[in-house]
Length: 190
Image (tube, rainbow, N blue to C red; front, side, top):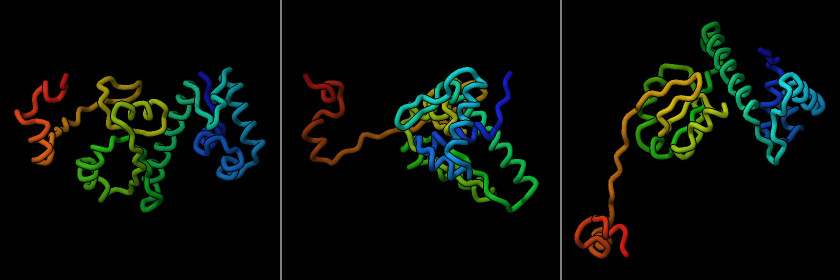
C-alpha cells in the first residue's frame, strides 16, 4: 500500500478548496504555485492515475476523494490529540452535511449540550438529505444527516428518528381546493 506524504495531500485539498486557483492555494500553504503543481504531480505519479478532474472548478477523481477523506481523518485525529495535549487550544472543527429541515428544527438543540462543554466548532453544510451522504463519500464532511440506510466504508449509520410533516393551509385555500378534505383525487385532479 502506498503511503502519501500529507503535504502533497494538503496541496490537493487546497486546490479543490480554492476552486482551482493555484495562486490562492499556494498562499494558503505558504509555498509557490509551482510547488503546488509539483506536489499534485508527485501524488498522481505515486498512485499512477489522475487525482483531479481538470475542469473549472476542478474536482477530485474517485481516488482523489478517497485520499482527501484520509486527509480529513488524519486532521481530525491530530486535532483530537493536540486538544488532549493542549487544553484550551484551538477548537476542533467538525464539518457536517445536514438537510435544511433538520437544521431548522432539531439539530442545534440536540447538539447544544455537547457544544457547550466541548471546544468544538461546527461547519454545517446544508444539502438535500438525498445528497448529504455524497459529501461524506467525497470526504468534504465527517458526518451527515441522510436518508440513506447503507453505511459507507469505514462509517457507521445510526437511525435518528423520523420527521413528521403537516399539511397546513389557510381556511379559504382549503375550502377552495379541498372542500371534501385532502383526498387522492383532490391532490391529483384529472
